[in-house]
Image 1 (cartoon, rainbow, N blue to C red):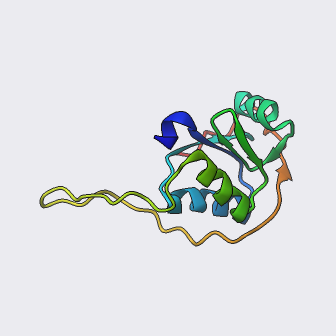
Image 2 (image 1 turned 120 degrees about the horizontal axis):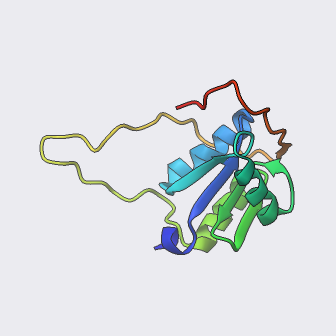
Length: 130
């Protein structure tokens, strides 16, 4: 229900451990989210700026009302709690004779304050990563 009222969007770029920890926290809580790479997506960068008022990432947007700038595990946990997301992922039932799907190995999120300015890449050349 929280995902319907407060859909999660992670505005990020290749910012290393901080962005990896941000993504890992969302995965650890089982939050369905959309990733917007603001270094490659000019519209995403514009949207992030309009929501946060800054050109620094990472930013967690929960709907249009709950915006958390920079990564800090306690602040992100509080925002997810406020939006009504469960603290742990829901239990999954495996299909008869089958697995529930692939999982990613993510390291635990460490409380790291901070955000870094985003510099959009020049257009052309590099094909997007899959």
